[in-house]
Length: 141
Image 1 (cartoon, rainbow, N blue to C red):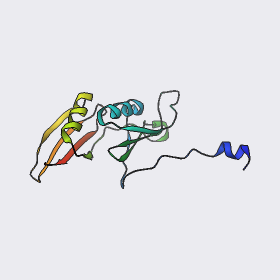
Image 2: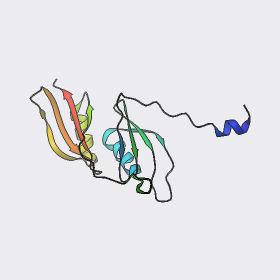
Image 3: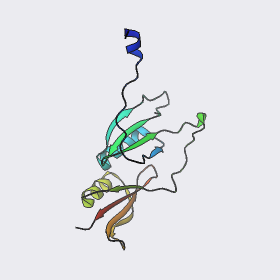
Image 4: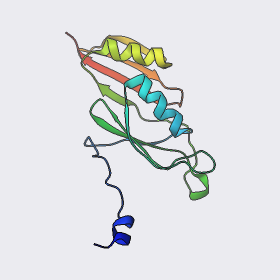
């Protein structure tokens, strides 16, 4: 293969983990990535460069063994920002107390405190600064 052909070869993308992968539009994808790293121990594995307005079209994170993908809104291309609604991002974790405290310490707003639910698991919900609702669930030990 010539040098020119090699130079144009796209970079290999990180593995996409999980059966259903949320791809969320968030107003401030770079800030959201930094927040999720603090709140959930996320690992950023890919990011497209930011444009002149500070937006990025793609960030790929690993959280708790799965993928979460983010982008900023691009209204000029038909993708305006919309208030998150109608979904909850759920993490099934082994140590809910650890995960819960880390999220609260990072700035998550408590919606439903962690407690044992009628179905038998410990469960709680909180909202991130970008408007997304997150749930943590763990077996009772």
